[in-house]
Every structure is written in C-alpha cells, then in structure tokens.
Length: 388
Image (cartoon, rainbow, N blue to C red; front, side, top):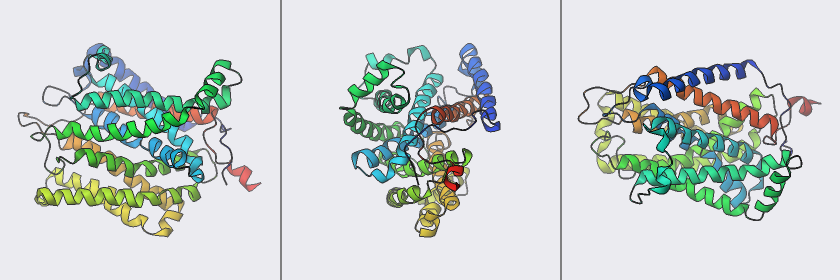
C-alpha cells in the first residue's frame, strides 16, 4: 500500500544516470554548435521546412505527453478522488519538467532566440501561435506554483521565505489548479489549429478542420497512460512497491477517452472521404496505420479485458503503445504529413537535431531523478520495507 510521499533513499549515481549524463553532454555540444553556428549548422531546416524534429517532438509531443499533469490534477484535486493522490505528485513533476523543456525547445528552434519574449508585448490576438505561446508560458508558471507546496514540505523550515510563500498560497491554490486545467485545454487544442491553417501543406490523412478537437482528445487519452508508464518505470528502477492497484483503476478512464478519440478520428476520415488514402501503399499510409492501428485500436481493445488492466507488465505495455501512438501522431502531423507544394526535397532530421532532442529527453529524466530523490514526490514504499 502507498504511504505519505517521501524522498527516495536510493543511491543517485547509477549506470542509468551516467548514460543520461552522456546524452546530456552530447546534446549540450550540439546546442553550443547551434548557438554559435546558427540553425543551418546543426539542422536540415530551410524555407520549405521551417520546422522539424524540434517542433514535432520537443514541443508538440512534449505538450501532449505532459498531459498527465492536468488530467490527474483534475481527477485528484478538482473531483476530490483521493484514491488517486499517489500518482498526482509524480505526474505534476513530470508535467513541470516537460513544459519547461517545451519552452526551451521553442527557444532553440526559433531563428532569433533572443526575441522569444516579444509575444508578451507585441500581441497578435488573431494568431493561434500567440495563444499557444501565452498559454504555455502561463501554464508553466502555474505548474511551478503548484510545485511550491511539495518543495516547501521538504525545505520550508530551512528556508523561511519558502514556508511563508507556501502558507500564503494555500488559500488560493485551488485557483491555480483550475487555471492549469483550463489553460491546458486551450493550448492542447491550439496546437492542432497551427496545422489546420495549412490545408495545402498537410496530407489529407491528417488534415482536417477538426484537428484542434483531435489534439485535445488525444491529450486526454494519453494523460493517464503516460502516468502509468512513468510511474511503472520509476517504481521498477528504484525498486519500490508497485502502484498497479491505483493505476489499474485510473486507466479505466482511458477506455472512454481513447475510444472517443478513435471514434471521432474515423468518423472524420469517412466524412471527408479520406479513406481512399489508407490503401495506396505509400509511406504516409503505413505511418497512419502504425499510429492508429498500434497506438489506438489495439490498446483500446486490450484495455477492455480486466486481466490486462490488473497485470503490471501488460498494463505498462498497453500504455506504452498509447504513448507511442500519440507521439507518432504528433510526428506524423508536423513532419510526415507536412509537404509544401513548392518543396523539391523531403525533410529528414540532421544528427544535430537528434542529439539536441535526445539530450533534452535525458535531462528531463535526470531532473526527475533529482526530484524524487530529494523531494516528497513518490508514495510507494521500498520493496524491502514491504517484505519485512
């Protein structure tokens, strides 16, 4: 059974952590080259393909996979389902780190990084990108405000200012929780709007006026599976008691959200007459079937079986397929489906882009490890405590 959240008393420096540091160093060197040599030195971005891996994965996918933060906050704090409290803090930490690196991904991707602050002052209220920028910046602030009670629980007595800030925020924290949910819904859908305004550049398998709704529904669908994946990896690697009883109840909501996303996606294909592109044998049709077949249909069917939901390994595998499906969806929409009519070549990410992305992912995992080691985030007990 879970206990009150507490720091994990495990050795920090392990072979896995050292591997993460290696990827961080490689990504850092690529970043150094990007900021000294420019975008062209490390990427294959050009006028035809102004965005690629960094936007498709670091930003769009990062936003979607951080959805566990607002979905669990909604369930645990707004709806008051206290049984799910053990997974709220880990999801919140993941979301805070994920959105921090989403903002960093935008900073790396734009040509004039020093001008990243301009949307705050020079506002274009007719721009979907403006809404995404403002919502992400605001929600990132809200996430770290929500982290203050967790940090203060450990260091509030040592840092009086932190303790006073926590006490002052306690009366108004519900405002930030509700604001976080609202902001998340806004920018999750607006990311889809970015591609909805480019009908001549996006393949018909993915282009639809319903992209904002599909992006929002897929974020709802991936929120709890991402919590299952991150919690299972954390408890397994740190040798903690399994949270499967909580996760198996949590994942029941995904049957509804993933099913709704699947139904609307196929209804949209039928309504637009886009089914003909599913059978043309092209690389894009194969990418679509990989995304929907392995990332939506198969896991949805498997989740209908109580035995799958009750098995730690099976549940992790199914949720990993859902996470991979949403990740592939964002890559497909922003990269695979994106084909400017005037382009005379295809886009493939350069090694520098891959290293930066891998370095960012490794840094998120490294900081997560720091968070659970020094802050009261995880509730699961150590296995040796359970067996004693």
